[in-house]
Image (spheres, helix red, strand yellow):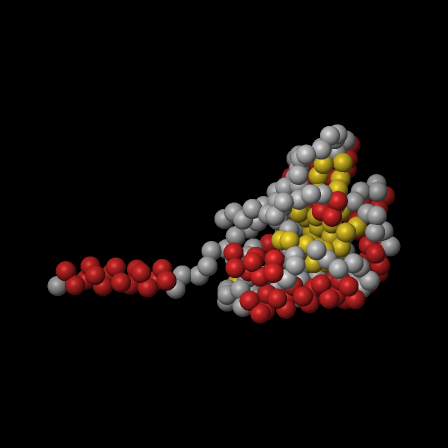
Length: 243
């Protein structure tokens, strides 16, 4: 009897492998270091839903610090005054694509951090193109970078996003863990950025403690003499997918 169970177990294992879900990747990104002068750091912020964190935006405006802001169509719709502020300072703010509805750009049915993914290549394309259309309709230039909700993808969804004409915006420093860190921890994360780092944080959670820490971390970086750049101002390579 046992000689029949072994082949059956192998067959079941092969079948399970064949139907396993694609691996999710979280791309990392650094800006190029081929320059002379102070350390360069790219600050990037996600505006997913919710409102605008003026603790962060006020620092960027007051200190004249450039940043790349990834906005969703949903955020633009509910934050017209904040969007107008970004548009009024094109020398500081690069507005890029965070999608239409803040749906993870993953092309098979799954859930990430409790958020239902797009679920198909066609739905990924709708999420990307819907976000871009909203940005252009708001009066900003056509976006060139895309960062999906949760910043996780499959290799095939990254290929689809590239086919649509976008680079996927990874990062190298997670400044606030989805805005869930405490203020002190977020300050330390951001302030630890070094030459070539791309920092991700959130600018849409004014009630979370993390925003205060992010603002302080930015000020600490400026005091240290770093040069802030937007992704559009850099020669950034394509991101490197990692587990």
